[in-house]
Image 1 (tube, rainbow, N blue to C red):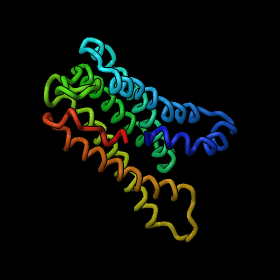
Image 2 (image 1 turned 90 degrees about the horizontal axis):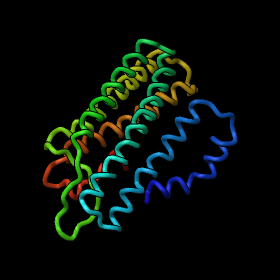
Image 3 (image 1 turned 180 degrees about the vertical axis):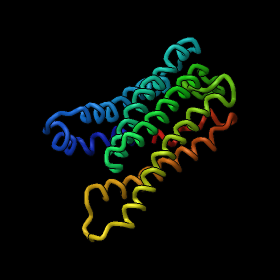
Image 4 (image 1 turned 180 degrees about the horizontal axis):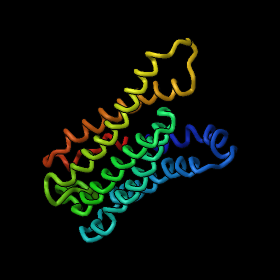
Length: 213
């Protein structure tokens, strides 16, 4: 509900600032990040209102995760572009971040292939992905936590270094990107950390992904 409400609330700004301007590759990244996630929630919403058999659930349970892989890649590329900007187009920094992102995607694919639908207690409905083993699926969030940590600390390091040498009181675009990036990535880091900590076997039936919110 929060996601769809946000889309409706900001649709006017979206048309003005995105669709009425020149299209670039970043426009495509923005579109994928904006509208793929709602498609993933179709299966989740339907399953919570129409009880499925285990065979039907197993057929569709990986669909949201497949879309999540695309959004993970999309968001990762956007984050790397931010690093590319604040590190003055450093190929070394971009290469390192790309390597970490590739490892994250590989771990997520490895973890999701171990997924199956959760057998819910009587009275509960839904199609929820869990791992066949108790630990393998949690590596999806650990991998995401590592990538977000790399981006966060690289952004923080550049922000601190930049503030030490900056003499002007005016805020440049790069300074604004670095400042907001530190706040944003700090929040994302904490959210993913909480997700990892609460991803326990005995609360999987009621646990929601904080990072999705």
